[in-house]
Length: 259
Image (cartoon, rainbow, N blue to C red; front, side, top):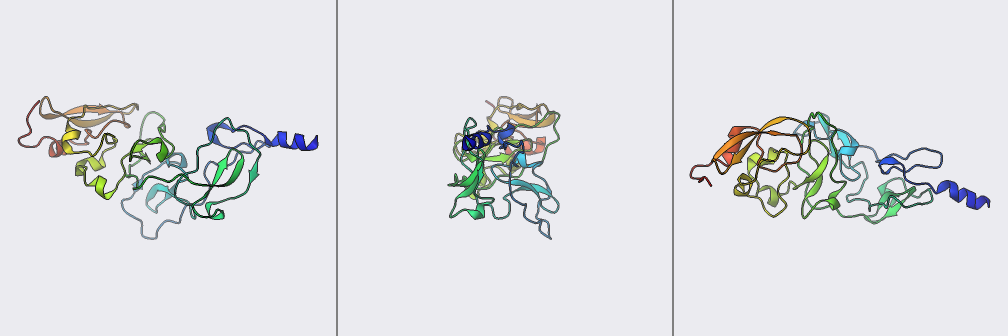
Protein backbone atom coordinates (compact mmCIF):
# COMPACT_ATOMS: atom_id res chain seq x y z
CA UNK A 1 0.00 0.00 0.00
CA UNK A 2 2.79 2.44 0.90
CA UNK A 3 4.65 1.64 -2.32
CA UNK A 4 1.49 2.20 -4.36
CA UNK A 5 0.87 5.54 -2.66
CA UNK A 6 4.50 6.56 -3.30
CA UNK A 7 4.19 5.80 -7.00
CA UNK A 8 0.85 7.60 -7.19
CA UNK A 9 2.40 10.76 -5.80
CA UNK A 10 5.09 10.63 -8.45
CA UNK A 11 2.76 9.96 -11.35
CA UNK A 12 1.84 13.50 -12.33
CA UNK A 13 0.99 15.13 -15.65
CA UNK A 14 3.10 17.68 -17.39
CA UNK A 15 2.73 21.29 -16.36
CA UNK A 16 2.04 24.09 -18.83
CA UNK A 17 4.44 24.81 -21.69
CA UNK A 18 5.89 21.30 -21.54
CA UNK A 19 7.61 21.81 -18.19
CA UNK A 20 7.74 18.89 -15.81
CA UNK A 21 5.86 19.40 -12.56
CA UNK A 22 6.95 17.38 -9.55
CA UNK A 23 4.51 16.18 -6.89
CA UNK A 24 5.75 18.99 -4.66
CA UNK A 25 4.61 21.54 -7.25
CA UNK A 26 8.19 22.50 -8.19
CA UNK A 27 8.65 22.97 -11.93
CA UNK A 28 11.84 21.79 -13.60
CA UNK A 29 13.57 24.42 -15.79
CA UNK A 30 12.74 24.36 -19.49
CA UNK A 31 16.39 24.49 -20.64
CA UNK A 32 19.45 23.35 -18.76
CA UNK A 33 23.10 24.28 -18.98
CA UNK A 34 25.26 27.37 -18.73
CA UNK A 35 25.90 29.75 -21.59
CA UNK A 36 29.50 29.83 -22.89
CA UNK A 37 31.49 32.84 -21.75
CA UNK A 38 31.44 35.78 -24.15
CA UNK A 39 34.59 36.28 -26.18
CA UNK A 40 36.94 39.01 -24.95
CA UNK A 41 36.87 40.33 -28.50
CA UNK A 42 33.16 40.45 -29.41
CA UNK A 43 32.27 38.51 -32.54
CA UNK A 44 30.79 40.52 -35.38
CA UNK A 45 28.10 41.35 -36.24
CA UNK A 46 26.88 42.80 -32.96
CA UNK A 47 23.21 42.96 -32.06
CA UNK A 48 20.41 41.06 -30.36
CA UNK A 49 19.59 37.98 -32.43
CA UNK A 50 17.32 36.43 -29.77
CA UNK A 51 15.27 37.73 -26.86
CA UNK A 52 14.80 34.79 -24.44
CA UNK A 53 15.61 31.07 -24.31
CA UNK A 54 12.17 30.43 -25.82
CA UNK A 55 13.30 32.20 -29.00
CA UNK A 56 16.05 29.59 -29.54
CA UNK A 57 15.47 26.14 -31.09
CA UNK A 58 16.00 22.86 -29.27
CA UNK A 59 18.32 23.06 -26.27
CA UNK A 60 20.02 26.29 -27.42
CA UNK A 61 19.89 29.25 -25.05
CA UNK A 62 19.86 33.01 -25.66
CA UNK A 63 23.41 33.91 -24.56
CA UNK A 64 25.48 37.07 -24.35
CA UNK A 65 28.11 37.56 -27.06
CA UNK A 66 29.76 40.53 -25.36
CA UNK A 67 27.99 43.02 -27.62
CA UNK A 68 24.53 41.50 -27.92
CA UNK A 69 22.77 38.14 -27.64
CA UNK A 70 22.40 35.10 -29.89
CA UNK A 71 21.29 31.45 -29.69
CA UNK A 72 24.12 29.15 -28.59
CA UNK A 73 24.45 25.62 -27.27
CA UNK A 74 25.15 25.48 -23.51
CA UNK A 75 28.61 24.41 -22.37
CA UNK A 76 29.03 20.66 -22.93
CA UNK A 77 25.73 20.29 -24.80
CA UNK A 78 25.66 17.96 -27.80
CA UNK A 79 24.17 18.88 -31.14
CA UNK A 80 20.81 17.49 -32.14
CA UNK A 81 17.45 17.48 -30.42
CA UNK A 82 15.65 15.45 -27.79
CA UNK A 83 12.83 13.23 -29.13
CA UNK A 84 9.33 14.67 -28.85
CA UNK A 85 7.33 13.86 -25.74
CA UNK A 86 3.75 12.66 -25.75
CA UNK A 87 2.03 15.32 -23.56
CA UNK A 88 -0.49 12.76 -22.29
CA UNK A 89 2.24 10.45 -21.00
CA UNK A 90 2.40 9.74 -17.27
CA UNK A 91 5.75 8.80 -15.79
CA UNK A 92 7.70 8.27 -12.61
CA UNK A 93 9.92 11.18 -11.61
CA UNK A 94 13.49 9.91 -11.76
CA UNK A 95 16.58 11.92 -12.66
CA UNK A 96 19.37 9.79 -14.14
CA UNK A 97 21.44 12.53 -15.78
CA UNK A 98 21.93 16.28 -15.44
CA UNK A 99 23.75 17.20 -18.66
CA UNK A 100 24.60 15.75 -22.07
CA UNK A 101 28.14 14.86 -21.01
CA UNK A 102 26.63 12.30 -18.60
CA UNK A 103 25.47 10.34 -21.66
CA UNK A 104 27.51 8.09 -23.95
CA UNK A 105 28.08 8.74 -27.63
CA UNK A 106 25.61 11.11 -29.27
CA UNK A 107 22.88 10.52 -26.68
CA UNK A 108 21.47 13.58 -24.92
CA UNK A 109 20.10 14.12 -21.42
CA UNK A 110 16.39 14.65 -22.08
CA UNK A 111 13.28 15.25 -19.98
CA UNK A 112 10.72 12.62 -20.90
CA UNK A 113 7.91 13.76 -18.66
CA UNK A 114 9.38 13.81 -15.17
CA UNK A 115 11.86 11.08 -16.13
CA UNK A 116 15.20 12.67 -17.05
CA UNK A 117 17.52 10.17 -18.74
CA UNK A 118 19.88 9.61 -21.68
CA UNK A 119 18.20 8.97 -25.03
CA UNK A 120 19.34 8.90 -28.64
CA UNK A 121 19.23 12.37 -30.17
CA UNK A 122 17.42 13.51 -33.31
CA UNK A 123 19.99 14.81 -35.80
CA UNK A 124 19.86 18.51 -36.67
CA UNK A 125 19.75 19.48 -40.35
CA UNK A 126 23.03 20.71 -41.87
CA UNK A 127 23.85 24.40 -41.99
CA UNK A 128 23.50 27.26 -39.53
CA UNK A 129 20.57 29.61 -39.02
CA UNK A 130 20.74 33.09 -40.56
CA UNK A 131 20.94 35.85 -37.97
CA UNK A 132 17.83 37.96 -37.58
CA UNK A 133 17.80 40.97 -35.24
CA UNK A 134 15.00 41.23 -32.67
CA UNK A 135 12.05 43.17 -34.08
CA UNK A 136 10.05 45.65 -32.01
CA UNK A 137 6.48 44.51 -32.67
CA UNK A 138 3.14 45.60 -31.26
CA UNK A 139 1.92 42.04 -30.63
CA UNK A 140 3.47 39.07 -28.78
CA UNK A 141 5.67 36.85 -30.93
CA UNK A 142 4.73 33.22 -31.51
CA UNK A 143 6.70 30.15 -32.57
CA UNK A 144 5.76 28.11 -35.63
CA UNK A 145 8.39 25.41 -34.92
CA UNK A 146 10.31 23.91 -32.00
CA UNK A 147 13.22 22.29 -33.84
CA UNK A 148 14.33 21.28 -37.34
CA UNK A 149 11.93 18.31 -37.45
CA UNK A 150 9.02 20.76 -37.82
CA UNK A 151 10.47 22.28 -41.01
CA UNK A 152 10.11 21.06 -44.62
CA UNK A 153 12.98 19.80 -46.73
CA UNK A 154 16.28 21.58 -45.99
CA UNK A 155 14.83 24.42 -43.89
CA UNK A 156 15.83 24.82 -40.23
CA UNK A 157 13.96 26.09 -37.18
CA UNK A 158 15.49 29.53 -36.58
CA UNK A 159 14.82 32.83 -34.83
CA UNK A 160 13.04 35.04 -37.38
CA UNK A 161 13.23 38.30 -35.44
CA UNK A 162 9.86 37.62 -33.84
CA UNK A 163 9.65 34.01 -32.64
CA UNK A 164 10.83 30.76 -34.21
CA UNK A 165 10.08 29.87 -37.81
CA UNK A 166 11.41 27.74 -40.67
CA UNK A 167 14.16 29.45 -42.69
CA UNK A 168 16.71 28.27 -45.27
CA UNK A 169 20.14 27.85 -43.64
CA UNK A 170 23.22 29.96 -44.27
CA UNK A 171 25.14 27.28 -46.14
CA UNK A 172 27.73 27.86 -48.84
CA UNK A 173 25.79 26.22 -51.67
CA UNK A 174 22.45 27.60 -50.54
CA UNK A 175 23.65 31.12 -49.84
CA UNK A 176 25.24 31.36 -53.30
CA UNK A 177 21.83 30.81 -54.88
CA UNK A 178 20.32 33.83 -53.10
CA UNK A 179 20.74 37.45 -54.21
CA UNK A 180 22.89 39.45 -51.81
CA UNK A 181 20.05 41.86 -51.05
CA UNK A 182 17.74 39.02 -49.97
CA UNK A 183 20.17 37.63 -47.39
CA UNK A 184 19.20 40.55 -45.13
CA UNK A 185 15.46 40.09 -45.52
CA UNK A 186 13.13 38.56 -42.96
CA UNK A 187 10.89 36.33 -45.06
CA UNK A 188 11.63 32.62 -45.58
CA UNK A 189 12.50 31.38 -49.04
CA UNK A 190 9.95 29.27 -50.92
CA UNK A 191 10.37 25.56 -50.20
CA UNK A 192 9.98 24.48 -53.82
CA UNK A 193 13.70 24.36 -54.61
CA UNK A 194 16.70 26.64 -55.24
CA UNK A 195 15.78 30.32 -55.32
CA UNK A 196 16.83 32.69 -58.10
CA UNK A 197 16.23 36.41 -58.47
CA UNK A 198 13.65 35.63 -61.16
CA UNK A 199 11.69 33.44 -58.75
CA UNK A 200 11.81 36.12 -56.05
CA UNK A 201 10.62 38.91 -58.33
CA UNK A 202 7.53 36.95 -59.38
CA UNK A 203 6.33 36.32 -55.82
CA UNK A 204 3.31 38.36 -54.66
CA UNK A 205 3.83 40.78 -51.73
CA UNK A 206 2.79 39.06 -48.49
CA UNK A 207 2.19 41.26 -45.38
CA UNK A 208 2.49 38.30 -42.96
CA UNK A 209 0.42 37.37 -39.88
CA UNK A 210 1.88 39.72 -37.24
CA UNK A 211 0.54 43.14 -36.26
CA UNK A 212 3.53 45.38 -36.91
CA UNK A 213 3.60 48.01 -39.64
CA UNK A 214 6.86 48.30 -41.58
CA UNK A 215 7.40 50.03 -44.93
CA UNK A 216 8.75 47.52 -47.45
CA UNK A 217 9.06 47.31 -51.23
CA UNK A 218 8.07 44.46 -53.54
CA UNK A 219 8.57 44.10 -57.28
CA UNK A 220 5.36 44.14 -59.36
CA UNK A 221 6.09 42.21 -62.59
CA UNK A 222 2.87 43.46 -64.22
CA UNK A 223 3.93 47.10 -63.78
CA UNK A 224 7.67 46.50 -64.07
CA UNK A 225 8.37 48.62 -60.96
CA UNK A 226 9.07 48.26 -57.24
CA UNK A 227 6.08 49.28 -55.15
CA UNK A 228 5.55 50.13 -51.48
CA UNK A 229 3.57 47.77 -49.22
CA UNK A 230 3.10 47.40 -45.45
CA UNK A 231 4.81 44.40 -43.83
CA UNK A 232 3.60 43.01 -40.48
CA UNK A 233 7.06 41.99 -39.20
CA UNK A 234 6.98 38.20 -39.62
CA UNK A 235 6.29 35.58 -42.27
CA UNK A 236 6.11 36.68 -45.87
CA UNK A 237 8.49 35.78 -48.69
CA UNK A 238 11.76 37.07 -50.25
CA UNK A 239 10.02 39.68 -52.46
CA UNK A 240 10.34 41.98 -49.45
CA UNK A 241 13.01 44.71 -49.54
CA UNK A 242 13.89 47.37 -46.99
CA UNK A 243 14.54 50.04 -49.62
CA UNK A 244 13.37 50.69 -53.16
CA UNK A 245 17.04 50.68 -54.23
CA UNK A 246 17.52 47.09 -53.00
CA UNK A 247 14.38 46.03 -54.84
CA UNK A 248 15.53 47.70 -58.05
CA UNK A 249 19.00 46.17 -57.77
CA UNK A 250 17.57 42.64 -57.70
CA UNK A 251 14.39 42.86 -59.76
CA UNK A 252 14.15 46.04 -61.84
CA UNK A 253 16.99 45.13 -64.16
CA UNK A 254 17.50 46.59 -67.66
CA UNK A 255 15.74 44.51 -70.25
CA UNK A 256 13.31 42.86 -67.81
CA UNK A 257 9.97 42.90 -69.63
CA UNK A 258 6.58 43.65 -68.09
CA UNK A 259 4.12 40.77 -67.92
